[in-house]
Image (cartoon, rainbow, N blue to C red; front, side):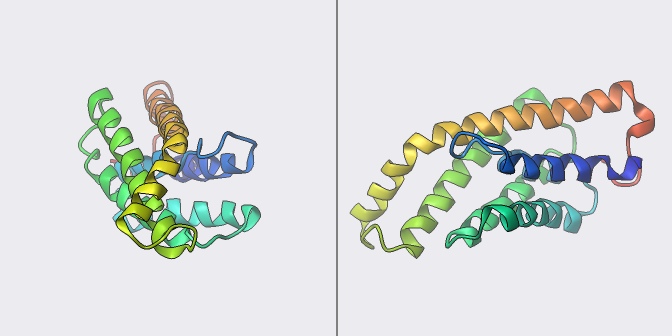
Length: 171
């Protein structure tokens, strides 16, 4: 059971996407950072958040920018590898803000590049980013909320229930 605590947290976070929430207030960035920070096997760290997202998307539906969303999630998970030497409030906050910004830049670029709503010009790209700005606040808020919940929650489990801490997959 204790080997499943980290994957269970990630899968649970992905399933919260099925609950009603403000647009872009999701655990996507937190899932990637958390998996990257705590899973020893980098393959599992990269694969688990993507599979968890895919499971949620089976219910939510697929869309034309999934490659950009999933690609940014993989990069954000790799950012989480930098946290594996120890999560602090400072490096966790920097990773969360950086991951949110990266997600905004990559996914909005994907909307512009793969869609037909914006002209394929510099002005079209700027318009696409400008239109995404109102959603960035929710992305950042969701990332901060879920990162805090996941990282703090896991650290509390490690502190108060050390029997639950997986020694073979946790760093």
